[in-house]
Amino acid sequence: MNSRPSIAFAKFAAPKKGSVFVLVADEGGLSDAARACDPAKTLDRAFPVADFTGKFASLVEVLAPEGTSLERLVAVGAGKGSNLDDYGWLKLGGTIAASFRKANEVAVVLDLPGAAVSGRQAVQLAAGILLRSYSFDKYKTKKNNGDDKREPKKPVKVTIHTADPAAAKKAFADEAAVIDGVLLARDLVNEPANVLGPVEFAARIAELEALGVTVEILAEKEMKKLGMGSLLGVAQGSPRGARIAVMRWDGGKAKESPVAFVGKGVTFDTGGNSIKPASGMEDMKGDMGGAAAVTGLMHALAARKAKVSVVGIVGLVENAVDGHAQRPGDIVTSMSGQTIEVLNTDAEGRLVLADALWYCNDRFQPKFMINLATLTGAIMVALGQHYAGLFSNNDELADRLTAAGQATQERVWRMPLGAEYDKLIDSKNADMKNIGGRHGGAIIAAQFLQRFVKDTPWAHLDIAGTAMGAPSNEINQSWASGFGVRLLDRLVRDHYEQ
Ligand code: BES
Ligand code: MN
Ligand code: ZN
Figure 1 (cartoon, protein in one colour):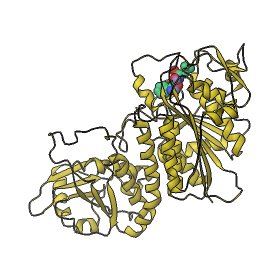
Figure 2 (spheres, rainbow, N blue to C red):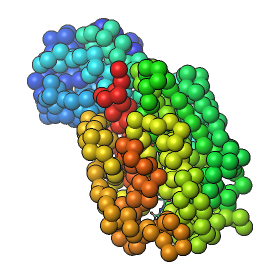
Figure 3 (tube, rainbow, N blue to C red):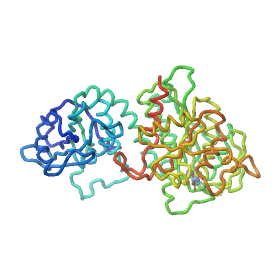
Figure 4 (tube, protein in one colour):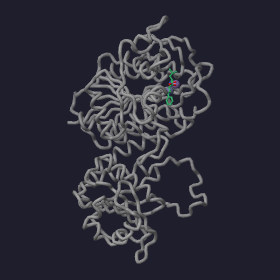
């Protein structure tokens, strides 16, 4: 995150010496204000030469133009600018950031000939710049390895010149809180498991206290006392200990029941005794993507002082394999009292969530619970990596999540639940088993979770395909996407704040 650009908003003004000048142009050409900016004339002359018509995300560059002290002039197409929705502006910001390359200072002129650009739109563009500029490079010691002598020492300074900079500045504070939450989630997911185990993750969560979040960390002893045999069974093959972190942000009315988010935080998933194949196992450092999203969301909500009471709970364990590791066939007793026959130690996420969900419901009686988990490979078979799987016992909650997914383009697709699937996890030897048959693996996992939520409105997001390794796009070039933070911030903002 040391590459995070600084962002300022200002009225139209001449760009500083040595900076890169970026002009947003749409299919209607340039606005009067944009045309009045000095280097814009040079770009305008370059448009016909480059066949530039303002098409969305298209680009023209003029290098070291004579008569100016600027490094580069860039025009970026906004398409039909007045038709862009929030996500369009976000993507445009991402596209613009890609054109910065090694610039130290950038002036973006944002004004369109059609409708005036609002503060909100300018802020989405800024957010896109921040999201696109993220890279996880803290372990690269050779930043300046000789192939690029012009690598900037400092983060790029971006000034967005717009008609109403005051409005943009005001709106930016809230949006920056959300972006910081997304980047925090990405950082956590990208971090290798030797550095980030359950204890270290819990310590990162405790840092949220600086934002006014109340953080409680439960260690093994307390979990044992609470009867969390399901979660602890997963943890017992690792020397690194297990934790539950409880985060609370009380921005709502007193006595109001909170909304709750629960995350799977398996800091590394070897599969345990049902061990995974070596190929690709390194990706299982990201098996805490659900917990990272919950942590990022709590950061976002607290940093923007959301008017809502929220609980975030994450179950943090390492699913490792040593002589103490649980075996296929072991039977554990969950906090709910229900017993589970562990037929596959690699179906561990559901075992962690069983106790985390039960504990959340039991202690907080939340308005709803939404859990996020990199739960199954099967969800990728079903949906690929562009949608997360959504499972819910509540149509209203499911519809709201779907709408928030459309708005943020962190999309979710509803999958079925039902008694026929539920009975597939009945066990001969215990109340249930942790795997079903060969088919419908993502649904079976969801059915398992549902046995721990009673009648509380609940949704499960299977983010195995979207939290990590998803194709890069305009606003994310990193392995970890931070999926879920923008989605759930939007859900809360649209429906649960006073
Ligand atoms: N963490 C994995 C799921 C996963 C796989 C996430 C690939 C991201 C990428 C989960 O714990 C798991 O191993 N699930 C098994 C379940 C099976 C044993 C029933 C799976 O999906 O194969
Ligand atoms: Mn597993
Ligand atoms: Zn897992």
